[in-house]
Image (cartoon, rainbow, N blue to C red; front, side, top):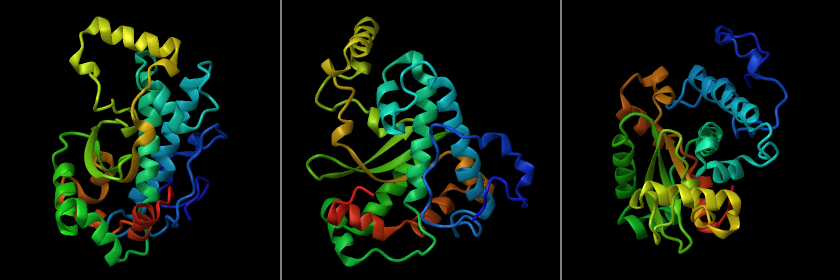
Length: 259
């Protein structure tokens, strides 16, 4: 497995300074990095995502969180707590992007297999067919202009749905669908809502994040696919389907696993 101190072909990236002891560190991936994840990622591209990009983002989180009371909170909690406070936008963006990227990589595998029949049936019940689900998800991903993420989500009623978030946007900061969002109120009321949340967070829930379970996501940031695919996003999306850990996805949807 590639290590920050390893002398290899990627030493030109000069990442040594990024690997100091921090409050937040990336989780161990369920595969080694040396061979990449073909056909999705070369070793160089995967190394960048995990050994360069994520540590860089987490270092930023640790740096900007000093003195905010967020230093020791889990990354997801930081995302939720900073999502509505403009003064914490830098923390939010870095924390959200780090969480999104790590979740993306953890749901891939170096031992690809086809989804089993049970998983296909579960997905087909909500999307008409398994292939229809893949087509819709891929269409959402292709529809992202610039950088963003495409998500398969599970709600409290066990309904599956697909959503995009843009830039470093998080599904945990989505506003509830049954109340007026900030986009539908004037600026003064939006500011008052933010202030009420800051002074008494429990009085005004951040979102329905507690009832949203991310199942799968696809990184549509240019720096995710450019090394291996340049601007051929169609080929990148097709390669993604060949590296999804369908066994893990099945455990989530069929057996209710949170991992």
